[in-house]
Length: 220
Image (cartoon, rainbow, N blue to C red; front, top):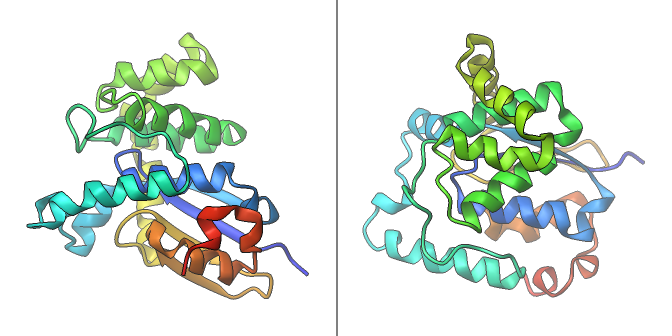
């Protein structure tokens, strides 16, 4: 029987994408499936779908921060108190760099995501600044190579990588993040949105909730 597959579309700007990445990357429940991370530009998805950012919706703008903290607490995820400087950040520089890493250093993509999510959602540093992106990635690639990767984000070919990934997310059905594209062991594919659907993701993939700890056992 084939192993289930999980494709997770991500943008550093989203706290819920960070939570989803942290859980998928660190929780043992997902060791039984093949995981792929795809960098996209959330702003492009929102615009294409005519979706309104939560912080621009009355009452939801206040609730969304509480919801973020509830999920971080449930899964013991470190997270910045409040919002990072300049939130919501323009993540074109980080997104293009990650798309370039996906193509040229795919085995390093999870480590690159970890470094950038930590920089933004734990340290609260402004990832809209290319120098901050380079500094974060220096922990993975070294200073010189990290700066070179970021410097290439102005190349047309690199811009196209992120644009193509964003279009791929839209074709998959995404309208926000995190977006989970799941294929179970029988080859059936479905999409799920949001960390509040983690329980459905796990069940669809045929994974054992008991292996995921208290966070999963208590989910609907």
